[in-house]
Every structure is written in structure tokens, then in C-alpha cells.
Length: 503
View 1 (cartoon, one colour):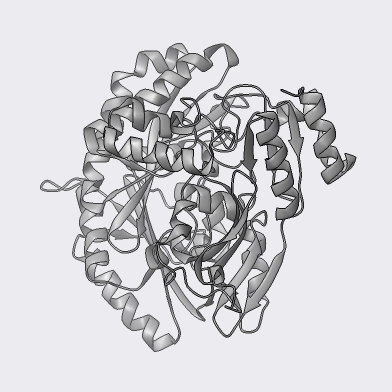
View 2 (cartoon, one colour):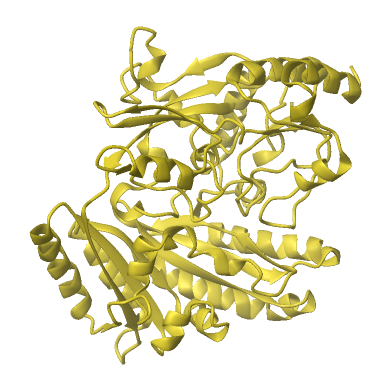
């Protein structure tokens, strides 16, 4: 086997000295993303510019038996963009950040996957009448890349209630397979097809192998996504929810959201903030508009869009009638009066609403995500779960410097919600092992007690699925078979789901 120095020299010949480094400082910076618990320091960081360069790098990595970890913006909270254990090569894809084609006949945009969601949507907004991607990426969309969002099956930006996950907008990919072959999926797999326009029609949906795969099956380099005209008209309202004698806040919120979904009301987004989360926002004066509005209890807000003022008014009347049936307190119309819906849609709040997790407990504070999907009716069960879990673990949390668990829920198309939350804790390095165990306990408890369907697999959640016994042996062996067929040397993102460690 060649030394890592030999590997470095061969890759340097491909990308040039400017785009490769083995500097300890740079490699250490790539050992982390937004969580600070898991760390593995790579030997080499490379910033390729084309699928051809990536193909050559992977061929070398296979020859030299060196692991490769693809990375976008590093904005995830579950270890998705970091090496598991020391060593290997991190491929930073953010140089590949161009919009390659905007097809206004088929309403498809094709991009290099290193572009951020915010940059993509900003550029699309200036094309013709103005367009966007429907689901506009995760809440970290100012830095999160299209490739990372597709790898994590992300939901949490704007448009989820109307358009669903970002992966549902994907009509095809260019992928460099682990052995170095470059393929297209979707319509462009037909070499005679001029433009990508659908994922389906050429046999199995092989795009799905690489969507939500957290980088274990190959390296995405290009993606084609549906785009939509930005609606001309929008409306927003925000409500405070208080318990009544016969109904808790969570049940009221669940009933309103369920009715909105099952009646197929045209909501662009709706978000539910638990009482505990709202208390954090007001206690720390993070969202002063809620403080000014004297909000107590849970909060629910929505955004709705339409192509005419009349259509919008009809839609809003239906949406707000459901809310009024449960005697929710409507806040003012302006952002200053507490209208988070207006802030969310008009002031880029869709890429800021989760930012309170960072630094909540001072400069050492960190957030450890456990994002998952669940049926809307389960919302009260999740409220109870987080409260009970925090109560059970209060002493352990304070022993490591403080922290707690909370979440936000928001609507997804067509009839489920995303529970975006986890732990916000002190992250002093000496306590990382304890933090990791607490984090893992929360994830496994959600899987076993509530049947949680997590989507930010990263390192922690993918392994928790295996450790909890949630995956049947038949299903897990099927995963191993696919991984082994695509990546016989186990070099791409090894360790996720423990794959790559056992062959």
C-alpha cells in the first residue's frame, strides 16, 4: 500500500497545489461541522472543480485504499459531513457552485451541487418573472449546499408544506460512483435525451439510491431540480395557543395542522413552536417581537401564497376559519407585533428560524440535532417525550454544564410534520463522551418509543438505527449488498450505518 504522502502527490497532480492541503490547521477545521461532539481529522482536504477530477481522485483512493468523505457546506448537526475516525480525504465540493442551465420550457434548473440554496434561489429570483425551487433547502440554506440537502433529504427551509422534501423536486443527478465511473440518473440516462425533465421512465428510480444516502453510495456532482414561478401574492398570520380545560396546547395545534393538511388547504408553510421553545425565545429575548407581543404558551404561524388577490383572500378565509374554531389568539399583522409568518416569508426567516440553537449556552454552546418526520397526529406524543426525556436526564445534563431538549414542528406535504429539534447543551471538550451518549440515548429512545423516522442520518442517527434493532436483518443485509456492489473497497463515507467496516 502506498503512503498517504504518495496519495497526496498523485492528487496534487490532478487539482494543482492551490486546491489540496495537508496542513494540520486546515485538516482540523474539516473535522467539524455545526455539531462539536464527533471528530475525525482527515489527512488531506481537496477542493475539486469537476466530476472528471473527482473520478480520478476516487480511482487513486481505491488503489491506495484511502477513505473519501464528500462535504458540502458542513452545515448539518449529525456528523454527516465529517470523517468517522481520523484519516482519509475530505472532498470539499463548494468550488462546484455554478448554475449550468435554466430551462424555462420544462421549468428545470441544473446546478453543480456545491451551490448554496440561498444563492440558487437568489439568482433564480432575477430570471424572467422570478422563480424558486419550491422547497428552498434547509434552515441553514445561507451556507448549506444543494448536494448536502439532497444527501440529507432535507425539509426545513421554506415551502415544505406545499412542495415536500427537497428530494421530491429532484428530476435527475450526475454522480461519480465509488470506483470512478460517472453516470446520469433520470431522463439524461438516455443519451439521446436533450434536457432532464423526469426521474422516471428508464427502469428503476436509481436517483433514489443517491437521495438521502448521506454520501455512502457515490458523490453527487450535478442536480436537476424543478422550479416554480414565485407567487405574486402572499399572506401570513401568527397565533398564540393556550391550553383549555378539555384540550392541551399540543392537541389544539395538532388539530389545526391536521385539518389544514387533510382539507388540502393551500399553505406554503406552517410552523408550531412548543411552549418550552417559545419560553426560550422570550426568556433570552431572541425574538423580541414575541416578547413585545407578550406571548405565552405555544405559537403557530403560517404562510399562504396565490396567483391573485381574490384567490389569496378565499384561501386565507378557509385557513383562518380552522384556527378560529380552536379559539387561538391571533397576534398583530406586523413583524413587530409578533407576526413570525411575515418575518419567515418576507425577511428570509426561513433560513434563520433555527439559529437560536447556536450559542444559546454561551460561546461553548452547541446543538445536537435529532430531526425526524412523523404523522401529524403524533405531535402531542413528541411534546410529552421531550419533556419526559429532559426530566429523566436533568442531573446528567447539569453535570456536563447545562442544557436541555426542545423542538419545533412544521408541516410537510402532504400529511405529516417534521420534528426539528434535539439537544442544546454546553460543549466543553472534556464532556464530549457524555454528550454523545445522551444524544444517542435520545435518538434511540425516539426510534423505539415513537417509531421515529429520522432523515439527517449523518454518523449518529444511521448507527442508532442499527444499534436500536430498528432495521431487520433482511433490510440491513440488503443495504450491505448494495453498498458492497457499488463500493467494493468500502472507501466512500465508511462507518455510516457501520457500512464499510465489515468487508
